Image (tube, rainbow, N blue to C red; front, side, top):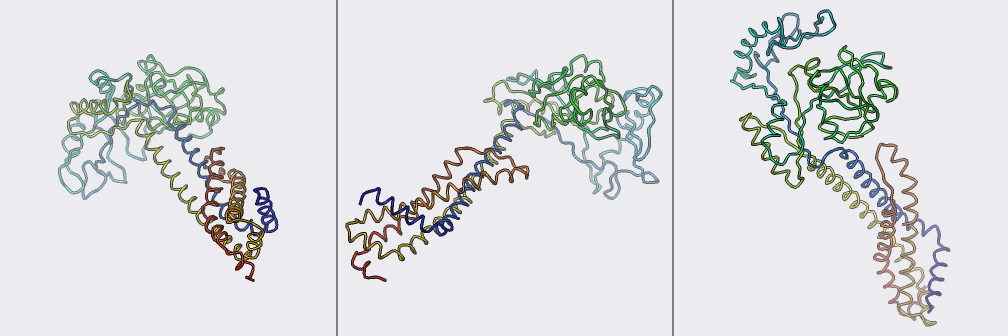
Length: 472
């Protein structure tokens, strides 16, 4: 038989049994759609990772210290000494005066609080800080002696790392705090993340400005009340980045001039979401907002990304000389990106494995239907063999039918995936549809039809013509 004649027979058999072909290919339709969607989700996940870390320098290393939770001077596992009325013991350590919770503290005339550690509060703190050193950290909740040494990384530590750790190109330090903000279109105060940074933070984090300029060394030295708004923060507070530039925003009831507005970043760097944050000079934040009660992160940039592990070991050695018993949290950007990508790849492989199972089920369906078809068409097979059809012709006819059924399912599955993708996207799942995914789904479909259709086709080709013609 000529190949064109075989194709004609295949077309007739498929067109005469449209509904059966559709039902047979359902498993392939689901499998193909799953493959396309899984690959799209995987590509979307990679794009999210790339976008999230696009502002991270590959050689960036973050150093921070997690303060141990101390109960201070307590009785029976309590959370600190209490005063009558439910108030907590004021914090006088280091010359700082923090009023008991629930109390109001009215600053002196002029609208600004005195600098921490100065004036009368300093003298008062001298007495009580001695009291704190005597009893604070002496006992934990179980009555055992406990070391409550407070470690706060400083610009001096940053300078030490820059001086004694070889292979560093840049260093900076930053911290974050939550503060009440109002101004612009905000009628009531809202809480925002305020980040205290140095002038080089923007360059190290690859932050780009939409308007104005970033904080300068002079702003930090003079403790100036200026700030830079993230893109989303500017829109939320003022309605638009244009209106935010050179306006006033009030942070903890003090006016700050908006010196610049960042372009939209969509990233997180050193725990700071740039779009949602407000950036102020490092020293300004310490003076007016936080005092010494901060947990800064020092960020260093390795000049050669291949030497990151060596740099980390040297960083640990330098910090150990200053803080012998402290354990610092050190993480590098490369490890973060690698971990995120591996997690995404693992999820993608799991989903592809699930899609493969669907394909196997669809293939079994094709094989079962073809077995039934061979049984129903035994007489037809006998006639074809009687008029000169060879085993190869019979095998090829049934195999082509299986492949056509699976390819029809594959094409329908790809179409279904493109129709379903907008619905999936509404659940905040990023999808990147691609031609590669569609081609791969069609290849899977073809392979499935070939593999699972071969055995029924082979069984059909093995039928003896006389026995086939005699069967009813």
